[in-house]
Structure formats: C-alpha cells, structure tokens
Image (cartoon, rainbow, N blue to C red; front, top):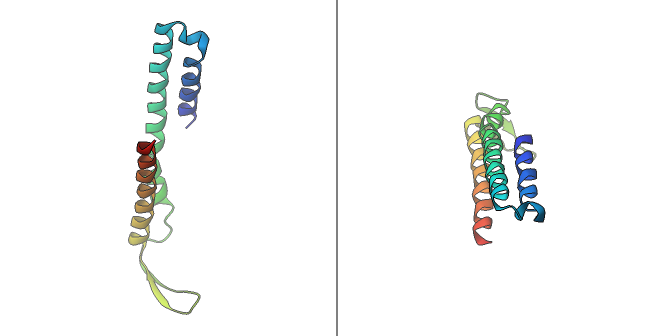
Length: 101
C-alpha cells in the first residue's frame, strides 16, 4: 500500500505547473506514477482474499443458538462465501460509481 502512495505522490508532482511546462518530463512522471500505482495496488489486492479466508476460525459446521433460542447450523464454507460475495459486491458497486462520474 505504501508503494501505491508513492505513485500517488508522483502523480501529484507530475501535475504541478512547473512540471507541466516540460511536456516530456510531465509525461515521464505520469507514466512512472501509473506503473508504480499499478504495482502497489496489484500487490495489495492480490493478498486481500487469502487474508480474509485465514480469519475464518472454524473448519467444520457446528450448531449454535441465537438470542431468541433458535438452533442454527453455522457452516464455515457458507460464511466464507458470503464474506467474499459482500467484498466483491462492494468492489463492483465502487466501480459502478466511477462509471457514473
């Protein structure tokens, strides 16, 4: 994540007026910023899914009671699937917001 931050800083630097005056330098800084942000983001997003999967404590289904006394079966596979679906739903929702802008 720190690498992506450096890319954002370079991107900001590439857009300040003294740098824009020199088109080749501005284009080089922009290209470098995009490459660094891609490396930083790619390394970060690729590790989110395994990190979420490791947080699941239970490996086998078990029976639990709710506050109302109802007995329910807690299935770790379904819990992990739901976590991923919510994560990807939020990711798709964020991309949809970008398309609307």
